[in-house]
Length: 315
Image 1 (spheres, one colour):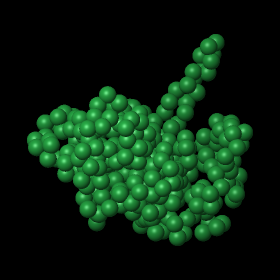
Image 2 (cartoon, rainbow, N blue to C red):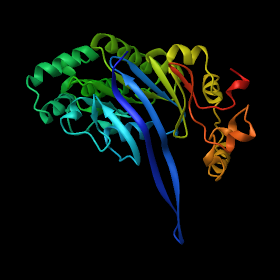
Image 3 (tube, rainbow, N blue to C red):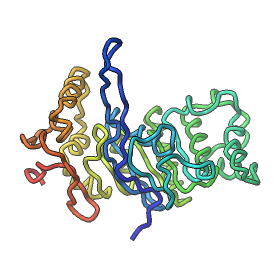
Image 4 (tube, rainbow, N blue to C red):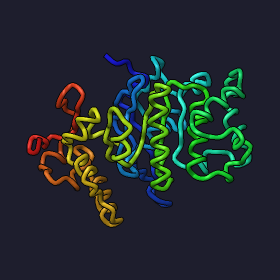
């Protein structure tokens, strides 16, 4: 049985929104709602869903940028539910979506890559920076430049190199190619694929693009409005998707019109729908009971789980 590097157990994150200047009422937004999954050592676990589904919030909660509401996170056997220690920060790193906002404009590339080594007092800094830049395809002479002097793809390479320079046990990638053009995205994805094989990396790969996740992941969880609706091995998820939302993503028909999105959010805020399936307003096979009763994940096989009570109609 594969060992896990990261175990997420019933993780929940609520945000409270004030109703208005004269209102004492506070609305609750469930950014993450009872999320559970495992990332196996040496494997890539993909998290996929539309914008606003809670994917980036999940990454920030795991690394301690924002506090959880409830639940547990176990990293390499240690409970990190209340935050990761300084020593653990070299073992769990992150590559952010936008390199422009995550790379200091006042530091040269070399100093950006050396900084984690300084913080964690890792020796042979120059040698380590040279090794990692060679692996990710950055020329040594380029490290004298500032971030604004690099292209988008080059900046993301620097972000990836910074995440790898401490030789971490787990790397979280939060939409690492969404801000890049198609050609550059393909180059970065190919780079990540080669790094996974070369360095035996364990990755949590977050994306809205199922095609990218299919290419790079071993296991995949599909997230809708803060809940995991389906999780399976990549082969099973893409060959036999079961949840209607997963099928919708694969068919590339997410709702894009702002009015439709607002309508869905209005319906979801209804008290009754909070008790049942959040996908009810969009579901093509919905039943009356779907909006009234809690939907718990059901095991289709040992590595395939689906949160849908109506799935018997289309499996």
